[in-house]
Image (cartoon, rainbow, N blue to C red):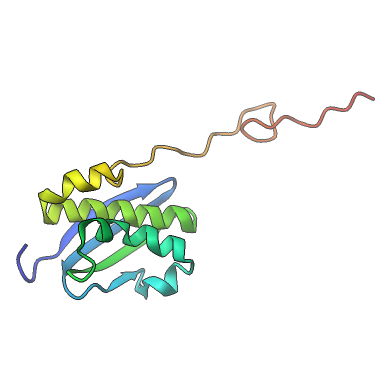
Length: 131
């Protein structure tokens, strides 16, 4: 990867969509123009975002800039993780096998089930009253 080159990748989870730019640097991660710790307040969400960097041992090698919208906080964290994984594969194709083995390259296909007619939600029925 060239010194000034920025790599771009997109990822998604549920209704959340993330775009990530990678460039060589000191390991700074910003999400929506805020620091990672300020945007994702829980340790689990920050760990989910950092997972691809930890697996490939590149925590101190790249600066990450992410823009994410839609969905909830957990979906956004996993969308950033998915986009970051794809960007790392663009940076170095040698990362692909280790990221695939950890299941980070696969987009999670689970989505919210649609509401059905005659039901309160997707599966919950209306309360039955015998009398």
